[in-house]
Image (cartoon, rainbow, N blue to C red):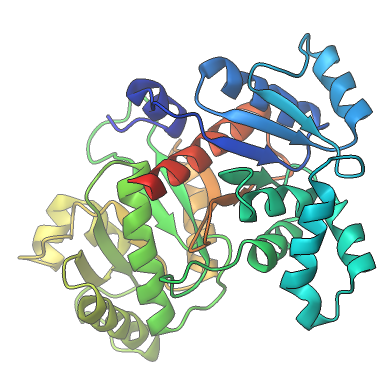
Length: 337
């Protein structure tokens, strides 16, 4: 059975411990998640925030800084001046002067992202308090898009319940959290990025289903054409990938239905990467899979950035923080391969 990110890291015991900056370092859930990650030995953590508040929360949870946990207060950190200079160089074309750059870097969200940009951390996680829009905007502005990425998108890792049988399997759903209405070319880019994420986080070869309300021409509509054109673009750009579309979800997921609706397909009935035609479909689907199917959903996880950065839900619990740190570590390690 496919292992969740933390269990995967524990089983592989990576030789290096990447550094992950946490922009909400005084939040009790973030501190608890950081301590669990530290105790598991998979990462070193930087808790970013007012030093007194971070130290107080560590103490409340029976811990102190040190041995894999450090505190960075952006208002007093010896790195802040250099990070402000770098941020000014990055954003002055947008009218950010030196004073505004210093003020910006003293905010934990930007400081944590700048640590990654300047090589002081391998990845960053935020969003327990900050909104998704603030987190993603900061990551795009500071870390930026990877040179080889078509765009920045997101996905969820979906893990079946322990006793699930039949066709249940771990899957990657994209995009369920960021890109509202991708074009055909953007769908192809999301699929290509999701294939790499599947290899890095599920340790599986991707079988990509481009989803629709139609299977292999069963319906005709511009929305179906959008999906078939996405497949054409994906095949042209990445002929090495196993992909098919347009497919209905049951055709992509259930072997018996695949045999009837898409005979001869290398993907139908066994897809582990589900690419949705828009955010409505993706967001609804992951929540139905989670709430009715009993699957565990981890995400939204960002892909397409130059370096790892991820967003938490404001309703997260400590284990969610630990799992997202593990995801970020796996993304960082994949870049070292």
